[in-house]
Length: 180
Image (tube, one colour):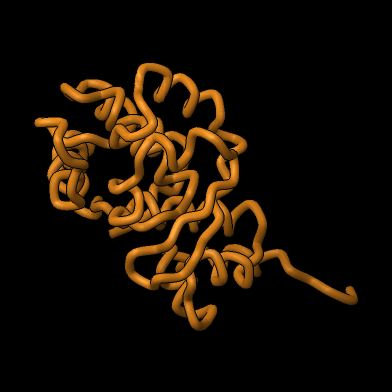
């Protein structure tokens, strides 16, 4: 799976999501994912109360069991709009039946429909997490913080994970000069 590397790719993804039956839910799920960097298993199980009362809620990650603080300040308008008609105990991302939350497999199927529309074969549920990482790194060039956010043990894992390729490294060094 690859990150969405440009705003155009993100907008194209949103374009297709907005044409789905559950567009409001799916668009919010996508935005929540690319702005938090959470694994899909940690996104789909959220309840309204998890994000309603704090712009910096803490969660326990399913895979690692570690506590993680979410920084949702930049999403407050979208959150308020999305949850305005929901109760605290409601799932943020309900399944079609509404009795349970979406499962990562269901999200994968939704994303595969989008991938087909985009004529891409490198889209999956991890695309959101990788998109967050890629753009965070591009803006901050801080691999150490990103490594910490993702819980990775070394920089190489993080760089490979977000798709920082040899070409990008080469591009960054083309005009690098010191002392002359």
